[in-house]
Amino acid sequence: MTDICIFPIPDCVTFPGTVFPLHVFEPRYRKMIQHCLDTQTPVAICHTQKLLSPAKPNQDPHTALHSNQATYKPYPIFSAGQPELLKALDDGRLLLNIHIRQRYRAIAEKQTLPYMVYDCEPFLDREADPDDHDYHEELKQRILKRLDILAFRQPEFQAVYQAHDWQTKPVNEFSFQLFGLIAFDADTQQQLLAMDTITDRLERALELLLGID
Image (tube, rainbow, N blue to C red; front, side, top):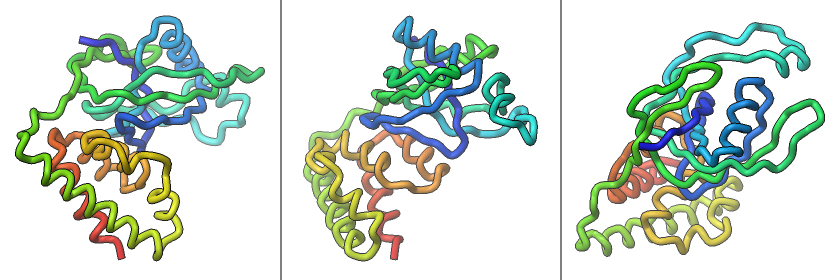
């Protein structure tokens, strides 16, 4: 089991092999990040199932910086990685990159306040059949061909299609990093994250891309 500190963000799903920029201003999460930096504890950036308690309305920046905001219930499957501190600002805010490495499943909540810590286990793909390798490569090439077509129609897909080196990744890494570049809606992204085969992720990705006009 692994201790994971939870940073819940509504409508935000992260995938292994991606880097997530994070701006931290709440006191509890500044404390959490410092703990993670000191102890090498992974940070999970995860989508939320529901709002548990709302933030106070109409806060000025000073109040927001010195008080905790909304509290959420996270989804039980999320991705996590090590935080990299880029800059600590004079007012206490932190600018970071979270290097997302692996998926986890939450098993038990170990701590609720001032921030959530879960006892987690790695969430791994089921073992792939070697005979599926050619099919996975075929799906990858069909996805790339579809992205090539979309890049001529919609400017936002040009940056995705031309993004550095992700197209040459092995199919397993490709099947995750693809969703770090294409912004499907958060619930769809969460469903993709919870899929435990390369086949399911690539087939769903192709289906979604074919549905874009």
